[in-house]
Image (cartoon, rainbow, N blue to C red; front, side, top):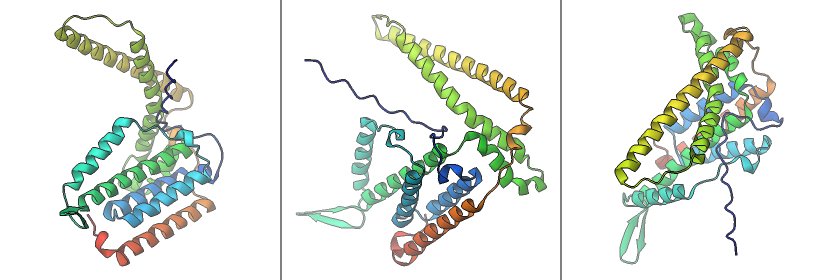
Length: 280
């Protein structure tokens, strides 16, 4: 009887928009950047349960409207669940209100609740960034950054160069991930050598790391040279941030919805639950 085949793990897909058209896909990239920045500021100063829940609802609704499939979500490895359990168990030892009586033993759950809140905050922020990545073309980022940073040109800040640098970094990141994955797969296909001693195995492992790093640097330089030739053939780096872009009516409506939802969540956090919303 053969053992059942293991289900392949879904990789992390970032900086690559999910195919399809929706209201979220059609939003201006600057609108998404403004939304992420505003939500980040809100959760930084008021990381309470109500703002976290409000942002989570926004992310889920945006994913529903953008028709993001479940297969886009990466698989969670087992060791990560183990780390979360260990972190929650360790945080429980911190005690704090509320206190639960288990027979003759009193256990403070304040540390556990803080750990769960920080974990939920991290998941929400990761989901927010992933949503922008899955619904935004990388080519739209540079024009949006250049337009949003236009007032900085008055103080001689090279915002166009910054926008170009951001765009090139975002474009190169997926290519380098593919290159590293190919190199790692090629390394695993090499026949394994039987090494007698632990010292020899350690030395061989270090040599393989150096070889992989050298191959990765070579692949990155080759990709950079190809990208430079492509940019030169298309008119230079100025064309990257010179594409026309700007907000439309749907962008203003989206920003208004985000302001209303975040403002309502903040008002509830400060009025209904004042004790749990102290700025950190």
